[in-house]
Length: 352
Image: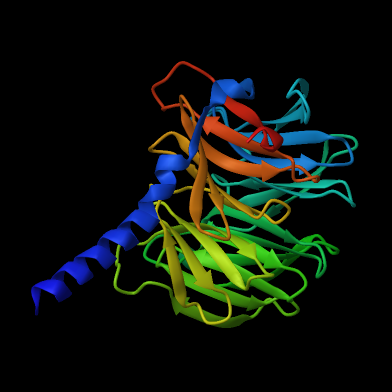
């Protein structure tokens, strides 16, 4: 190869690297101290925004001790995070999904493998659906994520089990009973494309799983990045208008951009390993939590460039967005050995 060709190749390689990382140089850094914060105690996990009540629900499991199975769900004022109610539950709440129109908060009870339905008008339990069967190894799993498909009256729940034997539970929300159990699916996180009648799940095996939204049956499962065996996909956010999904991986770096129709990997957005990912169509932004790096990233969804970072003193976990798309909420967890409380952030996006 000629020296001129070598120089040209090196220049292009440098240009590509600069394109990936130069955005970091111009990204504005914020601190959690720039926004509202509310401490809540230990074991805070997922969030759900209620536009009707202008409230934010925060699920918590204060203890993992066998003799302390109770949970607490906080109802916070959406604007200032003032604690309005502490709703005690018989089972520990981790995942939450809100059916605002029917006033039902679905709470995933990971340790018991069940889902509890809470009436948000009375704060009374409607019923608890036992999903995991402790007596049958093939039907034993821990609840991880619960995502509502309002159009088709279904709740999708991931059941985490060992050796890729995870379950996918489908609850009929009108009958309030289990409709389907799909075995060996290994689903972890979900997202629903209501208009496209599709449900997308990501797996611990690095797969994109597509379900028919009308029947809840499997359409396809694709290894997104088969050359990387360490993938453990945790969550996915959808941009249906662009036909893409954004995948958060807890094991490896980068947020992956994938074509929803083919499962083809389109792009890698340089980031630390991730927990939650959320797409805001109104601002065309992607929000990602990085637990290990104690940071929340704000990414331009057109250029796949980092716009802002928000540094946290503890480990950011779950995300929720207000109905007007102007406020981002994040749950932030302390190290297990810390005596300090987990807390929730109210991030005013208009300030970014």
